[in-house]
Image 1 (spheres, one colour):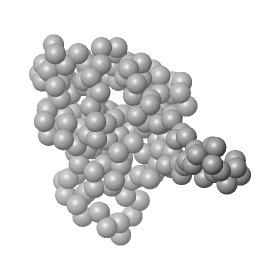
Image 2 (tube, one colour):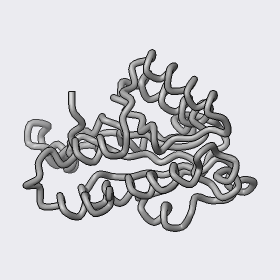
Image 3 (spheres, rainbow, N blue to C red):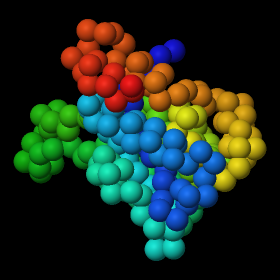
Length: 200
């Protein structure tokens, strides 16, 4: 099963100012997160951010925040507990038309937006906020794709333990380039050259 850009959303978790210097391979991880955000923008994939206790840990870098439609400030480790699920799968809109003025069979249903159930996740710390968010999303019946080279923990051991647990729970483990080329599917895609330039 390949990722489909038209069914995907990107969530970038907690790349915060006071966290990143302590992350294992933090610089490379943040570079891949920015790459993912830029590719998502080119491919018209909605991108969301989260920040864990930003008053204490700082915000995500401005360039990352700028690539996200909205950024969720949270205190719970799982962003789903703070409302991320409602952003990813908004509730259905109520029917249009005045119920008193139109018979039920003439009332128009609000057009529903196509569902984007493939959630591409990356972030810090892999064994805490990313893991708990991913497990909650899986429980809510989203497909979860974890971008391993855009994830970090303070130690390699904690990061790798998170990947093992996520794979066992049903998440797909991918890399930034895998996401990019699966979203593109072909060298004939109009954004191929722009995406390729971001990867090189």
